[in-house]
Length: 340
Image (cartoon, rainbow, N blue to C red; front, top):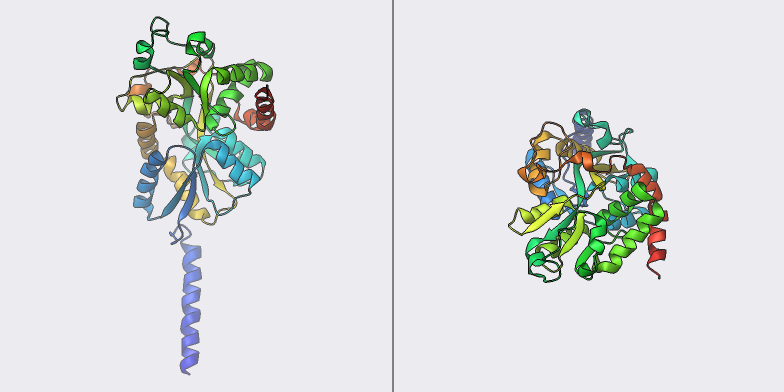
């Protein structure tokens, strides 16, 4: 009888557990949410710590560049990752096209303009950023060859002989920033001319950096005079007191930094909660104030450092799905150009 009683208790507990799972699907599990973060880890932790405080959900962060994330999730078929947080939308389009994502249309997405999200619900934009030319004004003024020159306003201005070895661009194979530059140039002026300009910029550079933030960091500390990177990466250093002048070239490329849920993840309910959270007005405002990117929700007051940016001067015809489709061809052309 005693054994029978124990069996009954065990069965009752099991049934109650199953009932709780189905009745309360949003209830947090003890399993951490595993997040691939494609922007800066400190910015991500500000968001994720607030998410943890509000929901009780623990998390693990794996910081990746856009190129690294693409390689890990597509080539290596990485599993156990729940969410891709940030990174240009063309990365998320790649994942979608390769069957790596699950659809989730957040209840928050209705307030986000169509241009900032996938119409089928596979990814949703959480911020917007523009490519910019950044100049370290102190380095520029102290360089006898540069001091008398006007600051660069176009990509071609970075090809001046006086700037040889004094600029940097991010590598389009490893950096989402670098690939946004290459893909946006291709859509603006054609693939051949885009690769030619990128190759000329590389030959002008002291190095091609692994990620866009690396370029901005080296600019801030004065290791180079000028870089191409996302404006937000430059402005975070401007906000910290570095003498950086940022300008958006005509018809510049831009990104929608997106969030998506991976099919290979183990914590779908928590992943959906994170999507809802990062699309909220509070989270959008917090992210703008730490990363200096534009929020995708209308009617959020722009940070003062972004007030002068005219978004209508960007390449308005830039398409993320085309950038994703062209990726292998463009990178193949890029590799071929660098053999010579």
